[in-house]
Image 1: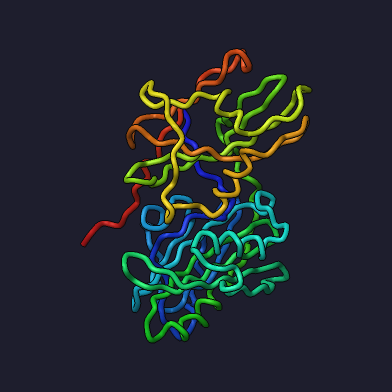
Image 2: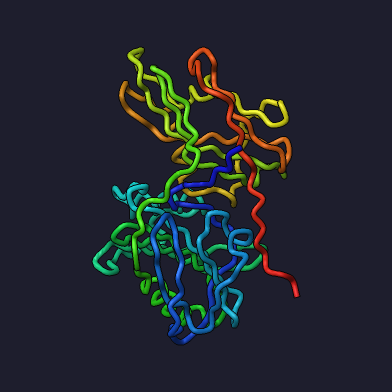
Length: 323
């Protein structure tokens, strides 16, 4: 049985609470690790790390923190740089954020700068969560081997302007300490034939529309054959996805659960793949329940020697004990 993790390069889902007022940075350097890379940075002096960041913020988060003096908080996502499309990143991400938050691209603040000689991008927009207003500061920071996303949600209070300055300082204090090399992928999930190669590159269970739960499968589709172009939508013909022997139908993630690049990957399902080329895409299924395993059954006609593969839904807890 295999338990896959979500590898969406950092572009991600946004629906949490984050950031606070403080006059300076803490002297302590907070460490975190992602994809074999060790990092460190300094939090604002009134902030503290949290243990529940995966369940409270984002299942792919690698670090979380909150301000002790305001209703503000932070979570961090990171991946190896080679996994991220950095081509025209600043403008492209601004457009994706605008679509996600119902903004015009030009109305989202964008600042491009450098941290340690590498590119950094900051976006600011105004948003709400659970009837509370926040200034969302998003930082995407490149390092020698990695790419980091920091999501600061700063409470919309009388201190938000002062808080912005120390949040900037905190984000830009990020440093790559050591690259231990790419983490080995255990139990790679791939189906291969003379015509096609399908490789599952990540999964995530999310909240869906109309109180449903959905399951997103990201995959790389390689056209190996000589029968002309094919689209990633052919996944539906080649792989049957079931739960408790019931075939799953495609669903839709809830708007505030959207990972930013899901929309891009969904569109790529309709793109043509010439022979010898690969395109990544994503398919989203509506779950029958939140506990039973997901089973991927490849077409025996195409993948003659392939066996079915089972995936387990995330059961990660990690919330701090209530006091």
